[in-house]
Length: 154
Length: 104
Image (cartoon, rainbow over all chains, first blue to last red; front, side, top):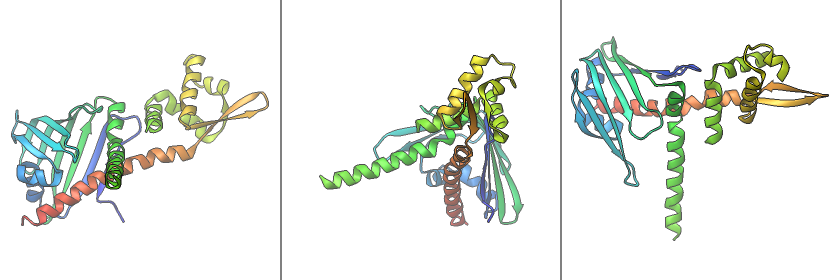
């Protein structure tokens, strides 16, 4: 079966291409990127600031189960409803720096749409650090579960 | 984690990628590998050392010579590496899709 979410990360290149086809009309897909209450739900984050316009910016904050806060921020360079968002993205205090993101929203049919996300990193090393993210989070999750079990034993 | 970091740093370098390509089809000695590059021999040795340390290459003694072999298993690990990242985004987008289906 073909994968609905694809990630293309070529060796030795400092960019990343993520594509996804949705069973959603284009307008609904786009709304998921602009309405704070909706972003909060699917990203599991708090939206502290979101200015959907050229020269605008955003700031999200996520709190993990240990109470540690993680912030994401960026500047919006271009905002065309139902078409594209060009912005920077920074996961603060992470080793992969700031990225330049090109988000393109496309209508496929009445009830289907496609998102293309092109991210450019400062270097190949920065990009690869980001690719490793789920591993470090996975390790943290395993560690937390272990901690819970240990707490139960006490 | 450290080992994985090394593998990624290993393939981030163009000379090291060229060495891997060269060794994909045949085993070679350090001297034979170095003769394919304009780079100084100690530099090539350093690259071989890094590639060997992260197990992308294996050394084999044949008589007086040490031959370098390509280790395809380790390379496969790199390809598998992207999968958790893809899955993370896939889960996130599935969530988005479900939420928006309920918005209709």
